[in-house]
Image 1: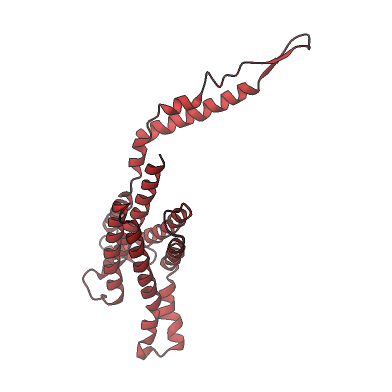
Image 2 (image 1 turned 135 degrees about the horizontal axis):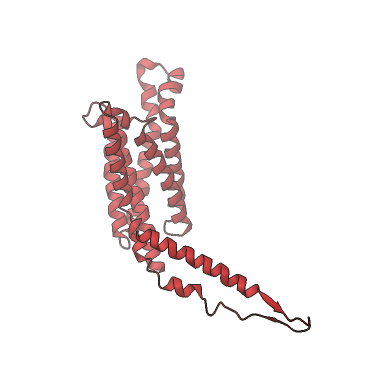
Length: 256
């Protein structure tokens, strides 16, 4: 309701601003065609900024607060679990599932947001660009299963399948991205610890949940939580996205 009221007031603001601009351009001629004069300027009487000054927009920032991504991720996974009964494992498949779609969407959103935060100088450039391109690769890998194709289709064509070497080499991209992510997140926590504690705590949560997801994907195929490995990844990504939104909120608060 608060969002609707604020949107309505902002629309009225635009309408009043457009009307006042048109009235400025209106002019009136005398019947004799000699004297020409403009009508009074109505901008002073109908100043739209005075209307906007009365709008309280502080409540809108709470609607899109940083805890929203984990809450939305948990809600979608719970809904997918219920709707996929009795074969609930289908909801957590690594392809063609709601959880896989959410994972790709979160990674892509994280890449764009990291790029924006880097452009706004909230993240160091070298670190931000590495993270942005890494998240973009992860989004593409999640959507098109790049490392799975490498592991199970392309490498067995060149390596003997009985040696198991193709599986080890196929996991290298995942391990490389994981180690790079740990380095980037750890560096970001060290840089932001003093000035942005909520974002750092969310980054730590993302890091810990991400460790669990990588462990399940590499050596924990027989673990009881193995069927929901994709959901664990989504939860880690949602914590990371929440941390980025927390940084963005700190920037908005400081600029206002």
